Image 1 (cartoon, helix red, strand yellow):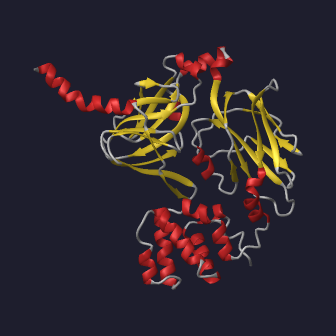
Image 2 (cartoon, rainbow, N blue to C red; image 1 turned 30 degrees about the vertical axis):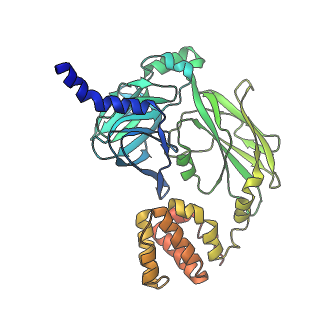
Image 3 (cartoon, helix red, strand yellow; image 1 turned 90 degrees about the horizontal axis):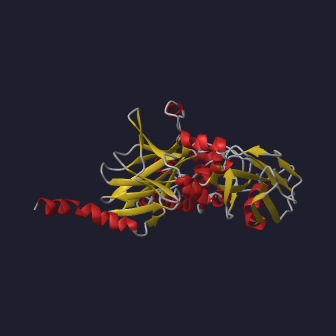
Length: 400
């Protein structure tokens, strides 16, 4: 009878495990961006495994609940005394207690490195207390841990990696990504500047994009393997300057992501071959990029003083919808109503729906009212969220 009762009590957990052994359900979270900081929000409909398509995080749920999570800056002094170093972004995760039972954090290890025990662990930081969780399992892509309660979680390396790295360069190899961002054209020199970022593969692309909103992201197959602390260089036959000549690959997990290389190209360049080479001139990544996809973006940036307020709002519409926060959006509506740009009926029509739907409605409604209304919205964005205004280049690109 005792054995039967024990199995009965374990049945819900066994069923959940069977469910999660199957394909995780992928989801695209709602993006909440305020002053350049990005948060992710998603409501899990019930128990099961759910994988964020933007961060790679997997949440195994005991019940349906809303998830709110973001990356935060590491305090490496907390890790140094324990002989640990960051191995991925540090996530601040909020959710009702006991709703999340397991967390899968994406790692950037190559398959060969995973044969070593004690290579990776998970730091859990809560209420000024730091603990290190031993993984339940490490797969080819993720580190799996049980979740005691939610707060800060991040992957860390132990002394094993550093010791092996000193002996064999092979163990310093990291799954990585090459990201390309085309910067705004200089209206005086008419030069194209292409930034190349070398980053670990488990850095979320959305985090990098949120820090480079004044640039156009060029989508390419980005995966490659790089060796920590080895020097790399970039070549581009179409460029008239690439700087620096070479640079060490350091593991950067944010919150700011600085370019590893800058490529300067003639404005007329429509296609360019970018090659990343190791210190022996061996190719580790190469791709031919098409710059004609960014023609419209380049034209908008080429003559920053030629846009009317209405066209200005139209040119930044996707970024505004993606980036404006709920509190700022509500304050914008109050300002527009108080100033008479919108009336009570229009105010009520914007009160329902998701944040992105409401933002889209507001910018379209005001833009269609003409120059004066559009100028008012731009002024209020600057007043309420200067960081967002600078990101969208609203002030600098208006006609005088």
